[in-house]
Length: 299
Image: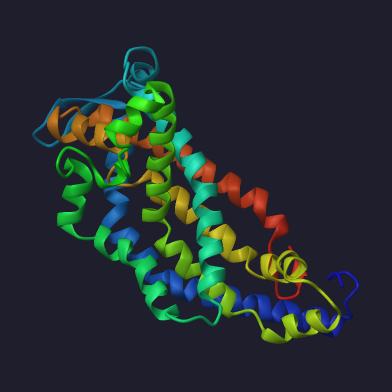
């Protein structure tokens, strides 16, 4: 039933519930807004100013306005930014759907009654806990015995000689991507698991009485009910890959900023990178919002 066809009493009640939910959301956002105003507003302003300026004197951070010169240098003179940027975007667009499918499948399996369910729930979340430590970040960045954790399982030399260099490269790329997906799906699995546990069991019981199969219940009940979680996971995964410690573009910007001390150029690259990530996240939300199931209605 659409809002237009509701009676005035039900419509006012619905609007009252929506206002209450909005008020609750704003209350939870207040601490974040205060933190942004106190600690991030001025650094963001300085970063934007640096992106369109050139530092004249480091003392007092005196700058001269240069307009879009820093951005022109990115596209017309820098031979590293665009290829690295395209590689990061390609990897993100490939890894995101893989992480979604893998984490959803694992969440469905470990949501069922099975022996060792608690162990498997913990095991799939362990990489998230380990990945937050300083030592693991060093291992991810510097490698162990000549290879990084995110490089994946190396193809044995004997098999590589038999397959040849071209086939070995394809197999190694597949193993690398699978490793990244396994390593980066812990949070998504937990969120999907929470969404699955929020679905009422009576919906499945009624569907079974009507003769629905497991496949039909997945498409007609499970997927629509967890659609808000899917959208949240898509945005989270995109942001996670774009800000990952092993991201070569983040590393390049970091070196330009702190090693080469080209602060204004690094600021320009950072804002260009941020705007693209923001547009990609907003685009994903706009594409999915019409298919989001909320409170018994489709928005």
